[in-house]
Image (cartoon, rainbow, N blue to C red):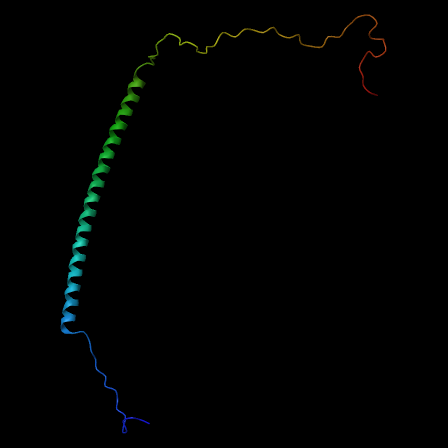
Length: 134
């Protein structure tokens, strides 16, 4: 049943790896990748440095603007404190259909207190007097 009649042979194991050309191509690709990576890192680093320098310059400008505004406010405060209070409002014509206030009128005071009638006969008549419901 076996077709070769004899002894079985061991399989032949051969290591077939990449050729010298393949290895050389891979090394060149790796070297190109490393060069590109280094160039990208250098470019990013330069860009980051530039952004940082710009932000520091902008921060200094903001500080100068803030300091000048503070100085202006302090100068205004000193000027208003040293001079007497003055008003620059001017009287103008009254606009049409404007609502204005008028002087309050005094109302007549209401009579306060309870007045009991002293007419004759009311105090002894039936139903007169307090209803206490006793």
